[in-house]
Image (cartoon, rainbow, N blue to C red; front, top):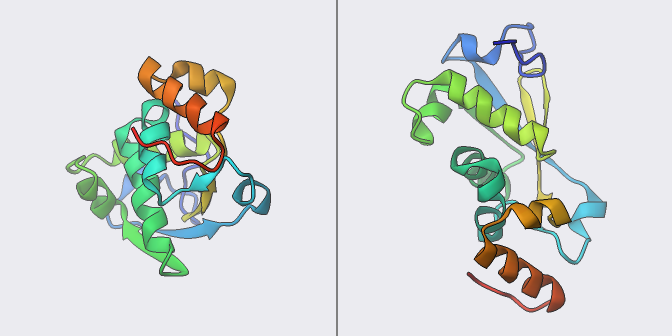
Length: 154
Protein backbone atom coordinates (compact mmCIF):
# COMPACT_ATOMS: atom_id res chain seq x y z
CA UNK A 1 0.00 0.00 0.00
CA UNK A 2 1.46 3.40 -0.93
CA UNK A 3 2.43 5.59 1.98
CA UNK A 4 0.36 8.76 2.51
CA UNK A 5 2.94 11.48 1.94
CA UNK A 6 1.05 14.16 3.88
CA UNK A 7 0.88 12.32 7.18
CA UNK A 8 4.41 12.72 8.43
CA UNK A 9 6.19 14.14 11.45
CA UNK A 10 8.43 17.18 11.19
CA UNK A 11 11.37 14.80 10.75
CA UNK A 12 9.64 13.26 7.72
CA UNK A 13 8.91 9.94 9.44
CA UNK A 14 5.48 8.42 8.89
CA UNK A 15 3.14 9.11 11.80
CA UNK A 16 2.30 5.42 12.07
CA UNK A 17 5.88 4.48 12.91
CA UNK A 18 5.87 5.27 16.64
CA UNK A 19 3.00 5.21 19.17
CA UNK A 20 4.88 7.81 21.25
CA UNK A 21 4.89 10.38 18.45
CA UNK A 22 3.02 13.45 19.63
CA UNK A 23 0.80 15.39 17.27
CA UNK A 24 -0.68 18.79 17.99
CA UNK A 25 -4.20 19.81 17.04
CA UNK A 26 -4.76 23.54 16.48
CA UNK A 27 -7.84 25.46 15.38
CA UNK A 28 -8.24 26.27 11.68
CA UNK A 29 -10.36 29.39 11.52
CA UNK A 30 -12.08 30.04 8.19
CA UNK A 31 -14.36 33.10 8.37
CA UNK A 32 -16.07 32.23 5.07
CA UNK A 33 -17.24 28.87 6.44
CA UNK A 34 -17.84 30.12 9.99
CA UNK A 35 -20.17 32.90 8.85
CA UNK A 36 -22.13 30.77 6.38
CA UNK A 37 -25.69 30.39 7.72
CA UNK A 38 -25.72 26.62 7.08
CA UNK A 39 -22.35 25.83 8.66
CA UNK A 40 -22.03 24.42 12.15
CA UNK A 41 -19.30 24.16 14.77
CA UNK A 42 -17.12 21.07 14.45
CA UNK A 43 -17.60 20.48 18.18
CA UNK A 44 -21.40 20.36 17.79
CA UNK A 45 -23.55 17.25 17.69
CA UNK A 46 -24.49 18.22 14.13
CA UNK A 47 -21.02 17.09 13.10
CA UNK A 48 -21.82 13.62 14.37
CA UNK A 49 -25.24 13.54 12.73
CA UNK A 50 -24.37 14.87 9.26
CA UNK A 51 -20.72 13.91 8.80
CA UNK A 52 -20.47 10.43 10.35
CA UNK A 53 -22.11 8.73 7.34
CA UNK A 54 -19.38 10.15 5.09
CA UNK A 55 -16.34 10.17 7.34
CA UNK A 56 -17.04 7.03 9.30
CA UNK A 57 -17.39 6.95 13.07
CA UNK A 58 -13.70 7.10 13.97
CA UNK A 59 -12.84 10.15 11.87
CA UNK A 60 -16.06 11.95 12.84
CA UNK A 61 -15.48 11.33 16.55
CA UNK A 62 -11.84 12.36 16.28
CA UNK A 63 -12.81 15.69 14.67
CA UNK A 64 -15.71 16.29 17.07
CA UNK A 65 -13.80 15.49 20.26
CA UNK A 66 -10.65 17.36 19.25
CA UNK A 67 -12.72 20.42 18.29
CA UNK A 68 -14.36 20.26 21.70
CA UNK A 69 -10.96 20.39 23.39
CA UNK A 70 -9.95 23.30 21.17
CA UNK A 71 -12.94 25.38 22.29
CA UNK A 72 -11.14 25.74 25.64
CA UNK A 73 -7.47 25.54 24.58
CA UNK A 74 -5.21 27.04 21.93
CA UNK A 75 -3.91 23.58 21.11
CA UNK A 76 -4.19 19.99 22.30
CA UNK A 77 -1.57 17.27 22.02
CA UNK A 78 -1.95 13.50 21.84
CA UNK A 79 0.42 10.66 21.27
CA UNK A 80 -0.64 8.47 18.39
CA UNK A 81 -1.04 5.57 20.83
CA UNK A 82 -3.40 7.64 22.99
CA UNK A 83 -5.46 8.60 19.93
CA UNK A 84 -5.74 4.95 18.93
CA UNK A 85 -6.92 3.90 22.38
CA UNK A 86 -9.23 6.93 22.80
CA UNK A 87 -11.20 6.03 19.70
CA UNK A 88 -11.38 2.28 20.21
CA UNK A 89 -8.62 1.29 17.84
CA UNK A 90 -6.49 -0.51 20.39
CA UNK A 91 -2.90 -0.14 19.27
CA UNK A 92 -3.66 0.31 15.55
CA UNK A 93 -1.71 3.33 14.40
CA UNK A 94 -2.62 2.44 10.82
CA UNK A 95 -6.25 3.19 11.67
CA UNK A 96 -5.25 6.53 13.25
CA UNK A 97 -3.44 7.41 10.03
CA UNK A 98 -6.47 6.34 7.99
CA UNK A 99 -8.81 8.54 10.07
CA UNK A 100 -6.51 11.55 9.72
CA UNK A 101 -6.13 10.94 5.99
CA UNK A 102 -9.90 10.75 5.62
CA UNK A 103 -10.35 14.03 7.50
CA UNK A 104 -7.75 15.60 5.24
CA UNK A 105 -9.38 14.21 2.10
CA UNK A 106 -12.70 15.83 3.11
CA UNK A 107 -11.02 19.18 3.89
CA UNK A 108 -11.73 19.04 7.61
CA UNK A 109 -8.08 19.09 8.61
CA UNK A 110 -4.81 20.08 7.05
CA UNK A 111 -1.65 18.27 8.08
CA UNK A 112 1.66 20.04 8.29
CA UNK A 113 4.38 17.93 9.83
CA UNK A 114 3.11 16.87 13.24
CA UNK A 115 0.48 19.65 13.43
CA UNK A 116 -3.15 18.98 12.57
CA UNK A 117 -5.15 22.13 11.81
CA UNK A 118 -8.83 21.34 12.43
CA UNK A 119 -11.68 23.45 11.07
CA UNK A 120 -13.58 25.18 13.86
CA UNK A 121 -16.72 25.03 11.70
CA UNK A 122 -17.79 22.66 8.96
CA UNK A 123 -19.31 23.86 5.70
CA UNK A 124 -22.78 22.88 4.51
CA UNK A 125 -22.96 19.51 2.85
CA UNK A 126 -22.81 19.45 -0.92
CA UNK A 127 -25.71 18.09 -2.94
CA UNK A 128 -23.71 14.92 -3.61
CA UNK A 129 -22.99 14.45 0.10
CA UNK A 130 -26.66 14.94 0.95
CA UNK A 131 -27.61 12.33 -1.65
CA UNK A 132 -25.23 9.86 0.03
CA UNK A 133 -26.92 10.22 3.43
CA UNK A 134 -29.46 7.62 4.52
CA UNK A 135 -32.86 8.81 3.21
CA UNK A 136 -34.21 9.88 6.62
CA UNK A 137 -31.09 12.01 7.29
CA UNK A 138 -31.14 13.50 3.80
CA UNK A 139 -34.75 14.56 4.35
CA UNK A 140 -33.90 16.08 7.74
CA UNK A 141 -30.96 17.93 6.23
CA UNK A 142 -33.12 19.33 3.42
CA UNK A 143 -35.69 20.44 6.01
CA UNK A 144 -32.91 22.10 7.98
CA UNK A 145 -31.85 24.03 4.88
CA UNK A 146 -35.42 25.01 4.06
CA UNK A 147 -36.04 26.19 7.61
CA UNK A 148 -32.79 28.13 7.93
CA UNK A 149 -32.43 29.18 11.51
CA UNK A 150 -34.75 26.45 12.80
CA UNK A 151 -33.11 23.53 14.54
CA UNK A 152 -34.06 20.15 13.16
CA UNK A 153 -32.92 17.32 15.38
CA UNK A 154 -32.87 13.71 14.24
